[in-house]
Amino acid sequence: MTGAIRALGHAVIQMLYYLGQVAQLFVEVLRSLRVSDFRYKQLGRQLVAIGFGSQLVVIVTGAFTGAVFTAQVYFKFSELGLESAVGALVCVAMSRELAPVMTGLMVTGRVGAAMAAEIGTMKVTEQIDALRSMAVHPVDYLVTPRAIAILISMPLLIAESITFGMIASWTIAVTLFKIPGTFYWEHLQTYMALEDIGIGMIKGFVFGLLIVLVSCHQGLNARDGAVGVGEGTTSAVQISNLAILIFNFFLTFLLNMFWPLGAQY
Amino acid sequence: MNAQKKPSKPKQSKQSKPVPAAEAKPCSPGEPFIEVIDLHKMIGTQEIHRGVSISIYCGETLVLLGASGEGKSVFLKQLLGLMTPTSGTIKIAGQDISHLKEREMAPVRKKVGILFQNGALFDSLDVAENVAFPLREHGERDNALIRRRVQECLDAVGLGKHLHKMPDNLSGGMRKRVALARAMISNPQCLLYDEPTAGLDPIVSDSINKLIRAVQRDFHVTSIVVTHDMKSAYHIADRIAYLRHGQIYFIGTPDEFRQRAADGDMVIDDFIEGRSRENGVKPAGEDTPA
Image (cartoon, rainbow over all chains, first blue to last red; front, side, top):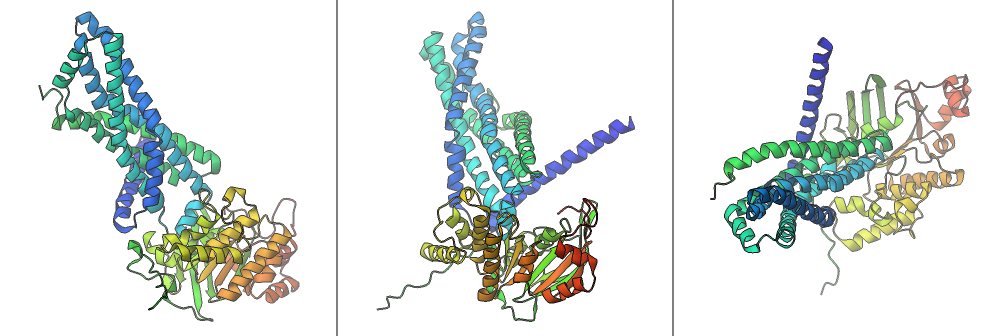
């Protein structure tokens, strides 16, 4: 019994220690914005890698999520005679939940893993020490441009995902399930508001911050050569994904307090 | 009409505003540039340094010897603030750096360059971009000036024709020479070399030794060289320090070092001759993490 309590206590302390380190990295990014020169070239590179490079995966994920969800909702709603409400439900769900979470998970796998691996490799090959030895703070050079790039990119990627999810949903609903397009749009306009898309984009902003902090933290703390970089990369993806899912739960309630679902009709 | 081009004014970074950088205070010969007083360093439960005290004077080349795992690289990293001492004082150009925070180290690091054991070149940048990196990061925006300085530094290390190669396509010796060019470009007052000739053939090693000597002679740079290579040590050292069991066991000129071995100091004699007392056991040091 004592052993179990001790193990639990150890795990809690480890988790708090980890959260403290990530928070410290966040503070350092804020400090870097204040005291360091802005690196436009690095920001440009990261915008291309994160924003432009994630287009395909985000579009495909958004479109197929929208299409599949439309099909599933239609199968159930058609039994109740509510086919025309399919569009509204799918689009609200896409905007508020599916697009932000799916995009967050996809960007973690594509971008977060790359960040952790690249920075981790720089750490174990002394390139980060080399940066420091040249009076360049690693956070200024490596983390801040990535953070700004992902904070710009994520809300836009989510808006893109929502758009393609809605296009796919409309295409499936109208062409395959023969739901009249007029009803589809009528219900969509009645039950969906711009705030729904805004909520998705706010979530994207938060998820982007989580991805960049977790992934860069893992990279900056990599050790033990190639094995350590591999472990750090895996942890970055795991922790980012879990953080996205957990934060999404709390964000849903928090944002619903400001923009309650259904308040507009 | 004045056709002379105005020298470009380097853009000053926000963080460097309060303290002027490298060229702050000239270093006069005979004056200590680096002073280490009673330095202790623990890594985990192992005590790497147990009261190291040493002064390195302006313009001299000090070679730091010692068995593998005696903490020579750790010592260099502490001089640059890349590792923090457990206790003790490190003064660079009179400034105590032992308790400075990362961002406060910037002005000190502009005075000191380092050549890492494997070069530590940025693998996403080509040779020219690697060498230009410190200048650009320190605020220089005149591309013509940067190109000229990069060419000068690469010519000095014999790699003037390899500007656009990627680090992956360079041999070990070339990587070290590029790293040396990168360390030299911002005219530091002091250069630290971490095993500059390790893993290189004797001819390339000799060229690196000559480069180190030339840098010291031409630019009056204070140098600390960590090496196991006795030929290098004799070639470049003004003084030799021998680190053993976390303390300075010997410090003196190369002649005094040889004399000490000739006088029967088995620790130094074994090291010079590369002699092991027992199978698989090093006579001079014990295994401690580097």
